[in-house]
Amino acid sequence: ALARAALFCVAAADPAEREAATAPEPVDSNDPVVAGASIIVAESLALLGRPDEALVHVARWGEGHGLGSLRDVAAASAGLTLVMLGRDDDAVRWLEEGVRSAAAMGARPSEAVARSLLAEVRVRAGSVEEARRLLEEVEPTGGVADAVVLRARTLLGEPGAAEALAGA
Image (cartoon, rainbow, N blue to C red; front, side, top):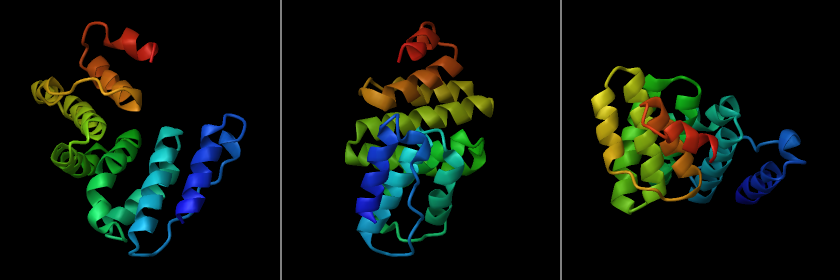
């Protein structure tokens, strides 16, 4: 499962192969390696703009299929997929869990993603001040996480955020 997930990620990263890259189907297993592979595939699909396909994996996590102790690692990925699909209410539980677990693990990029996505959800729900508080503690970490942070800051109307996001 892990090898198939890795091969999918490599194909998905290649612009010439991206469109044809076929994601591995979820596997019923309690093996943590299989769970890790599922997280890799779902996150890759979400980042490729294929959240419907990622949801096949994420929906199984919500049913308790095989994540075990990796649930904390998967929380931000699940939240990302659900936010991309407009399922904010379903995303909240995952994102709150993602903020807590990433903070506990010192995983700053994951915490930034979870906080930013949760801030987006809060803005759409009308809780703008809560969204601002969520982003107060977020510092640049580099990579995709910074783009997700800029997306939330743009939604909040922060000066310069939209321009920075366009250049990310």
